[in-house]
Image (cartoon, rainbow, N blue to C red; front, side, top):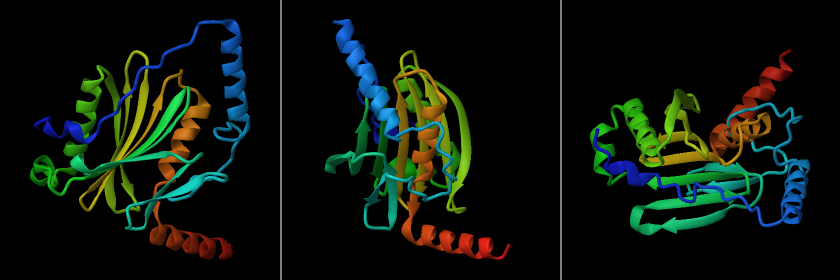
Length: 221
């Protein structure tokens, strides 16, 4: 499969630079990070029941386009529109990680039109190209279904100084690329943050319907 569509997913600033100028600055940064964790952004002890479209407590719901889809962020993300490439990027940067949600219109992308019937292979090619672009290794691919309808893929890319967890879903002609870029060692808190972020993606109509179904089933016990 051609790699022309690699430009659809463009991650920048993947290298993390450590500040070693003085011990005092390092200590201040560590204190800030500890406070950030304590505020509940990525609490290990959180017992949130993961459910598709569920926005974690104290997170912000961000509407995507005007089709009912949304995603949650722990804090307000930055937004950048790239009209030339039909992309919208949402990002939340921290010293140890970055959360991103990228929307790309594939309606005029030749590679998508040619391969949309082979969705799984198309996803894998996108992820493999991304791993090659950052000289990383794709550790695993996992196919899943969003809203029990739309086939998507989750993958992990590992490079020397970075680990990227990716969730790709194509709904109609829009590619939703949701990712956690980690500049630190893999820890339970970060994996929980990843799961919260991935599962917060949902559709208002579908989520409301699921909530009603859950309440009905709960009342039946």
